[in-house]
Image (cartoon, rainbow, N blue to C red):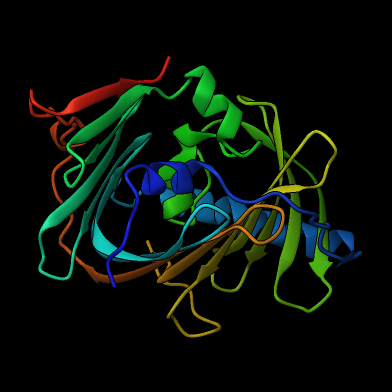
Length: 268
């Protein structure tokens, strides 16, 4: 059943329940193996530069947190470096909500309630509810299971205790954020991306599912599912269904002009 409050989608995007998360266990590896992992990881980064910088896809969004639980189907478009548009539809195929990020500002429009929430991504209220480590400007890259552009360093590499790949300890210089990345060197894929908080515990956990064979690298492969967790019970899962041909890189779809009669709630 389609049931959604007037601000559920906006808040669910930014806010997940608090709790406790521990770092994954990793095992030491030799220098030769570590060099191999670094080589494959750098190869993946090189491959990314050749891939399209925009996606169009149908998506099913499942939310489970203290504010709201349920599933919303819709359409998603994302473009590098920080553009996103989600259109949620009801079972009749009619638009219920629109959410867009144009690189600097967001707009959330509720058709049912004829309300629109808008403001800069750096608004104080957004900063209070956004999970630490969830840099909104990186949303495009995280939606594709890729690494945000910019300089970063790898301070250590260890084998995943369950042999699901190798854990890389990463520091993003541009944002001073630290992360752990579970990398599959055989398929050149990111399987998990853990953003760490100031206490070096997991702030946000991105897990990626793929449909390619277990030991085959597929150029420009995109995840089929993404699960986002934040320190406990809060969860958002994206299931990508039908993907559309790569559209031109146009920023116009990421700007929403609300109808004049809609009530405006501005975040500062």
